[in-house]
Image 1 (cartoon, rainbow, N blue to C red):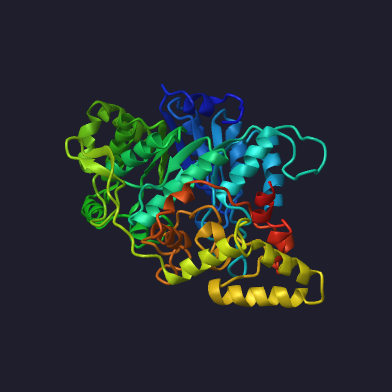
Image 2 (image 1 turned 45 degrees about the vertical axis):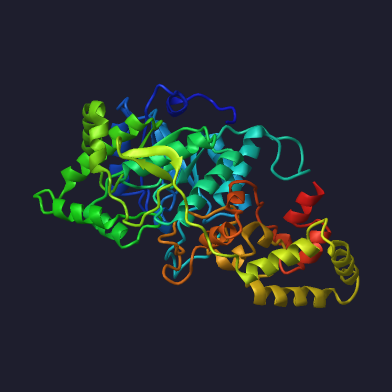
Length: 511
């Protein structure tokens, strides 16, 4: 972890003897009117409660335009309560990110939750252009560089004063398919390596899956604090989640049926949902989580007080509470073997089904790469010499067009000039991922389908995992860092850029 300034949130989060509580606020569209006033009033009530260490403020949640989080965050910070700003990659390029981060550092908004972000939805006169210039892993790398001081741009000028950001990240242990779940865990390895300081889980209601995440992190040396997500939905959100309308969030059939029965009560099931949240809160503390992240639409201070007080009452019998947190998909993936004695997991990973033989397209692409693009490949020098020679003649345009045509037919190439095929099982992230991510999935997939094109396009990283598993190389996705695309290379020959060591792969080879 980078050097940081102590604060109420940080002193609690990094103290193993404390259980840290945070609360999520969702700004509305405007900084005027009753909605903003109600949100600020709730924050003031929360600030007076010593059991809460910070509020988090979403940034354009669900991909919808909303008030910029630093506005509300600045006012809340003045009450003495710490603020976690959601830092999303969907709407900003890397230069705007850096500019905004220096502004937030100046304003004392140094606690972040770094996320790729939900795909942008309808705005002014239609749908906006998604940005995703950086993914969350790359944004963490930028933040870590800023915390070290200096300048993120090599040779840009005199050193800059270091910032003091604490960088949270999200992970979901609640994926139904093996490929989805393992890629969530593999991406977490990359996030921690890039500088993540703590983790917040995605929404879920299964105690064994919450335990799975802690056990996996402990076995793999991912030693950062984890906050479990305690989300209290209203009935409308329950329906949306069940239908898959909230990216990355799922409600199994059994839990949905239970919530529908609870909704027949005079309060439409609100108390039952709060009690479930309190039981989950008690379980998280019993499991050894560093804390919990509480949220939900329309949650009032009285609801927060009930949740925390009821969880404290239930704490001594947290194991009994596990019986109410068992809902999962009948065919849902578990990483570890079940422990019937505790209702949790044994430390032994479950055997995973063998994959079939590698597909011909993957084998052919890897063979060609090893022949012509691996420095020790038998065709490396010949291919390099031909490409560089043609690049010095009037045929350079023909070389670039020929390469693009070949790779378009084989991979759906978008002619980015900074090719990452070799790092992603020879699947193109520019054409295969709606968010053009390079270091792992966004978390918005459901049942293997892309968040943006459900039922039409499979998640790129599910396909990457399946390809690599067929050759026993899926574990490679735990490691590595793919830098962001260099847009100065757009629509140029990636072969020439590689051999001239202009693209990220060529620079890595040079280094």
